[in-house]
Image (cartoon, rainbow, N blue to C red; front, side):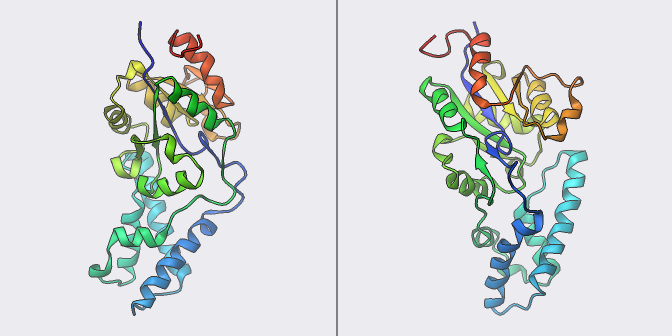
Length: 257
């Protein structure tokens, strides 16, 4: 009998709820670019208005995402940031990407929150010796997303295996990002379940490498159009509903069974 050893999770709209976020890309990125602008002009570099920097960044990022959706090569925010500044004549010798990312200070976005059932669900898995990890299609590096996880009180649940597409180099559903997570967490696909809100990226991608895949249906994700083409192994509207499915697939996985 196959034993349950790990559950891997997508991040946005799986663990963190973005449904109440009512801002836009500009409002999210502007304060981070203002910090970069202030830092570099303070060093004596002449830069255009911060709005111009942000527009350049947005154009490069949009092009990288459009390409990535076709090639599954992941956009990479720190590199896009460096390219943006190069286009505005910031000398290469001051483009210390690690320093710029620290100044950029990505944090939890106002209006986002952890789904209420998430902490107890994660704790129940850990209490039953099930390993957990994160696999997100973020173009922020995982170091950047870690600040956000910490703000939301989730970082301590995920001690080791946290993967952003920006770090792996590939977007889900490319198998490389799932395989990297499996290698890190030390389990075989048949011993591992994946949970995510995107039918193509999360469900189909995980199934292709041999994992059972659970779809978190938030009710507003445009991946719903793939229903009938992509069939998840289970569908949830609340994360804690996963336990009934785990009981069916892996009898005896938890101590109270």
